[in-house]
Length: 466
Ligand code: SDX
Image 1 (tube, rainbow, N blue to C red):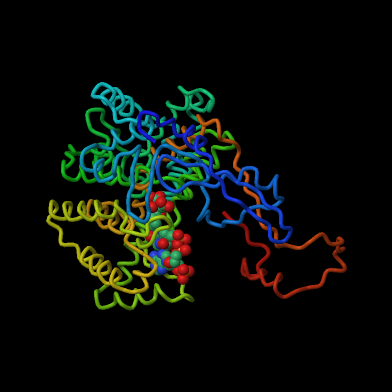
Image 2: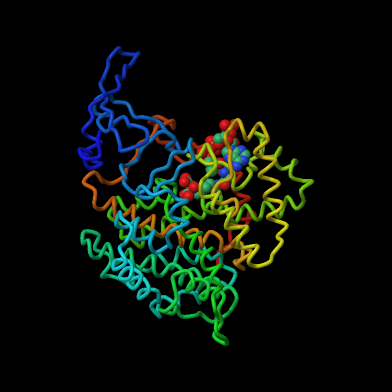
């Protein structure tokens, strides 16, 4: 279809009429299921009427073959290792834009003009401070609290402070919530780090860029001027770009599902942060460094590469594999280049990088990884860079969350503006007990299996939490 006659994406999805024929071999019945076609990528089978027509559900734990929505924000071709944001290749954006440009692009669909950029950068800059009552939340945490636990709590609490950004039906309030979340995440994350050190919180400065502010909030102290190294600020900016969005990943899908109930955007993003924390997702960057620590030397790599292949061992090579990419994650390529730049600028010879490079070489030559198309993903190198920049391991996923916030809120905004969106309510394949008569307590047999939980609190029925 020529560009001139290319209808809008949603119209395009409806415009082409093909179908799949579904036959129930049990009853011999057949149904025509229409297909929808996007602008690029796999077509979809429209099953919205399937249950009503057939009385059957589809079954897809983990949603390996399920499109949960239509979207114009990000396109991934996992086989080819392609990642586009609003049509722009990630390598182009990482090379030629800054993180604020990418935030504008994801939110508005186009890169900003010079005037739009000046306005947007200014809007974000003027919302980087936290309400003083919100700052007092930090003192309620133990100093050893994981910064992601703090971030979940503080971001969820934002809706208690910004009532003028919680009317989800008001486009202006939706945008002000987006600006506030993007602007405040570095402050929220950096304050969690400062709190763990017992150091005073720094105030963001309006004459610094987003990434310069992040570095100063993290590593500046009130007793002396902090001058961000431009090479390191650029590296942080690029890391945020690489983490900005990634289609319908677990945390973005969490934000969409939470938002489908018309929950406020701050609560939805807090849910996304909680989902990102898992080591199978955004927590992998922290897990990569812990894994490299455990491997220790190049001589021990083979042992762990084999351990990762043991079907009876839950151990996996952290930073390897991806649900969508069956090729090199294009973000990992840029991340590896950034890693070399940062270590060179800092004059660091990090043995963990040498170990990571050797692990990558060995894994990519191992038939198990080759056959299963397991390549390094975005998390494999990011931890090494962040460690070189001085971030503690438990802050790595916080950096991921700071970058991904714009992706979460852009998908939330797209969903709230879509005529297709409705509350997300999946069904299930029920495999539990069918209806059975009630059993009075005197008739219930004592089984070791259930009573085995008595050990849970050391058998002491009197324990209570603090
Ligand atoms: C992110 O979705 C996104 O876009 C996420 C993300 C984003 O930007 O939002 O890209 C960010 O989360 C990157 C992924 C970070 N996680 C890790 O690095 C953790 C290690 N990776 C694995 O846990 C795994 O690869 C996943 C979770 C990333 C993907 O899991 P899938 O898609 O469910 O794949 P799978 O578990 O079905 O794996 C397929 C096979 C399995 O073997 P079989 O059961 O077929 O015999 O590959 C094996 C897996 O055991 N496998 C691995 C492996 N990853 C998959 N074996 C060893 N090491 C690994 N890392």
